[in-house]
Image (tube, rainbow, N blue to C red; front, side, top):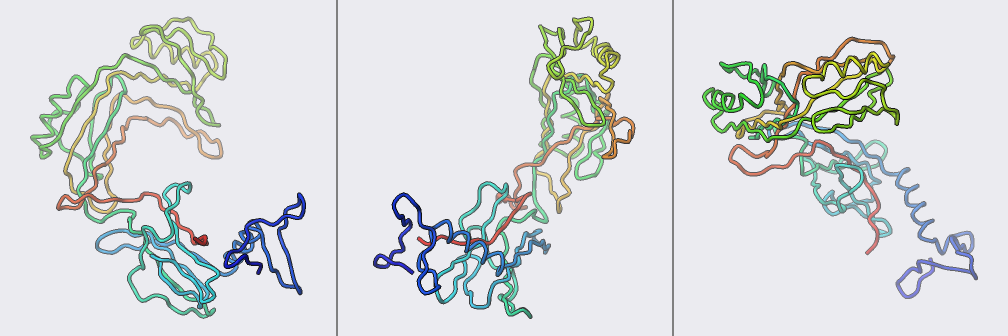
Length: 346
């Protein structure tokens, strides 16, 4: 290999031509960075195998990566692996979005057990574990559900798939916010808060077809819908339509005008239900509100077979502020991706 002292030149040119490969006696003595990267990727694909897996123990549901490496490589998931020649360093990388990746080894450790394990093909099997689990087995969380759907009453509430028994269903939102808060607190949820923020009435419209839902764009002046546009074309209707009283009339008019799957939804006050400090087990952490009336829409399967109306009468909440039972903050990774790659020389 060509050297300048102990440094390998990054670029060689002959006149204006870039040199990618020089050989002497049939052996390469210089590879450009592009060729070196290609050769290393080709070597990596032929010699290193990775398999993602999950494993549950009494504390968490873990994301593990099994890594098969040639036997001459030594190291660990934390620091990476190299072979005696010192020409290649490998590291394990983590991402939760396939865009931003951790530095080599960051957030990884050896999984419990004795590693490496010699395999029949002569390679060594290593098992690395991501420091952030997919979920912890037992935690405290805060539940939050928010909606701005106008004119709805809450008919039922479930937390972690269990119904919440309250004395006053249904609760009109936001008019009954204070009553709902009082009933939640009296029923075993002492920190519950039900609040609302005033918003003007607005409209959203979708036209559901076997090929999907097309967004229709209403124009409003005050509380009146003065036009509805779909794919750049204004639907020919008898505008204006006053909201909320003419919601059904607007929906019927759109369907009669050829938009047979049109659904008109009203939005207004934004209301929120917060229930803090609830124990959660495994990944059973759903928080759902059943509302009435729903906004039913037609739906079809992947074969474009009509399957009827979906009621669209559930507001799905979320869980936040994940922490241990003693209050220590915890992290979870709903999405985890891993790869083994070359660590560039420094």
